[in-house]
Image 1 (cartoon, one colour):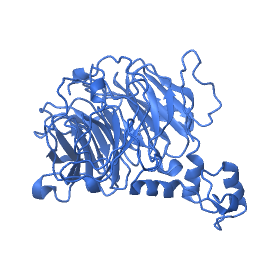
Image 2 (tube, one colour):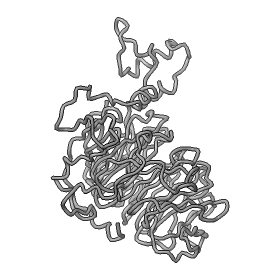
Image 3 (cartoon, helix red, strand yellow):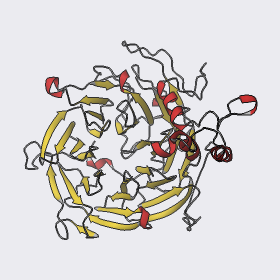
Image 4 (cartoon, rainbow, N blue to C red):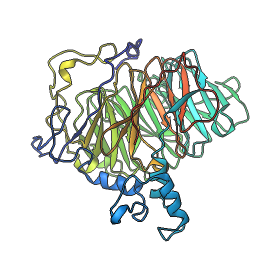
Length: 489
């Protein structure tokens, strides 16, 4: 991957129906026992993910059994909102209130698909858009050096307008500290800059109105190394940063000691995405252009310097990873035009660096995905499920689990090269909603942690929000708005 990769977007292969490929256990010799694709029928019910996570997801978003009691005592799901509210007033559950699963069952039925409403419009490509952990702030970063932090609770007023320092090509990633006091931003440089978000200044011009301290991730300590950083994340306690880079490495920076504490030569190609697996900070997930997802346990790295495990299944490079936060499951977006769901208990000890899946040349930066590759299968696929329908071309498209509080993480969602946002049901794999407004690739999008609100950002420079039922304000004019929706429950 080179900085010249981000070329002009072109319309991609249109809309294809999503499919869920469910794999059973894989033998260590790489033989697939069973697989379901769009061209095959399965003996299993298509709406049941044959895995523990399906049961966990149902428990987190399934109402109390007395709410779902139907005629003659039979269970009746999903339960209507009216029946749920009536059951609460009559204290059917015996608790006098809704449980978290009851709330998720109600809220998850109201997807943020109405709109869109324009939040902001810039004359450069939007690369990053993320809500803060509590949803009070929203961060958007653009190729033209601007980062804007909006106060969501104050009418989306710009709280901080940051002009980045020493930008190379674009702002590749940002991360807000857990206490929301600091923001870090990266570009195609070994220097990550940190900004005090809590300062009084609204206009933060690097080293003019405010100091943007540089954190040097290069091994020589003077920024002399030539590599770029694609991904950066704060740890849950805010004391460390983890980053993935174009020199095939993972870096961990100790903010309290103000020094680089760890470098792992992790992959055979660009490390496009990294994140901490859970609150402990011990486990790190990484994804690379070498097609592998890897799990790193920092407690035993000093002993062998090797990953705790490798997860194979993607046929092309990994563009993004999102952890479910439980130290067990995560999803990855791949340039093979698929999202995969992983259980780290199924990881192997090693992976082949040259599996030789294709006998043709293809580069996602300027080429459409070859039709002949759509039916290719990885012989050692260890993923739990595969979701298709969106497109991953031209840029590192991101995907996420839906919020735990409001949905029980029962959906996954992603941007797409074909200018849309896709929402999939985690268990059934169904494409439950497609949001269409943008005119260029949607690289990033973010679901509010508590409200049925989703914000998408695109290379067309638009930042728009989708809600249920809506904020009451005027939406984007119909001459510009193009919304395509599928059924959503």
